[in-house]
Length: 166
Image 1 (tube, rainbow, N blue to C red):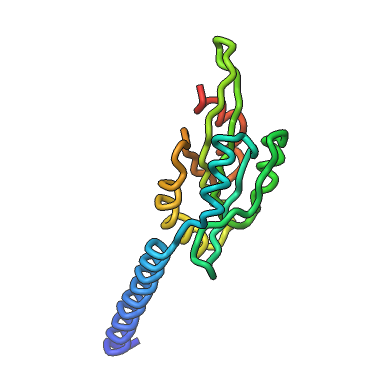
Image 2 (tube, rainbow, N blue to C red; image 1 turned 60 degrees about the horizontal axis):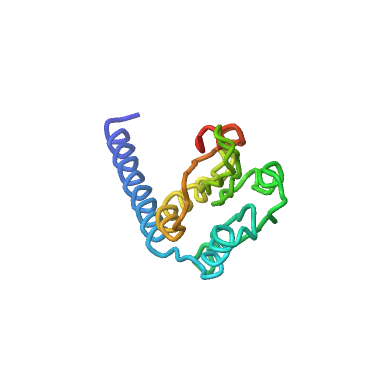
């Protein structure tokens, strides 16, 4: 390759980097600034927190509505395994889980966990969208005790919740 060819190649490489960076920044700004939280999502969380109507709530981002919406709820009798099975294998979600446990003093307690589920196999765009929208959504959920970022089921299993709650 001639010197002119190398120079052209380096120029195209630098231009493509600028374009890619611009696309990523544009996506990030749009995703983080425009994502709202549906009233139904807030109310469903309050039902879990105050009335104990749900064991868990799974939320997803509705890109058309540009808001976080309820995807699924689990009744008070549902197990942790049912909750974990309800999370998609290949897509991101937010979830809250009401974890009941007994302390070493034999007291019944409950702690609410916020889980940001972002499996390794999910699309990069989904990971970015959920990551940039998380803080705004999380601020709407007053009363969450602990937060977990999980990329696979072992990072949020029952033992992890027990350790965090004690």
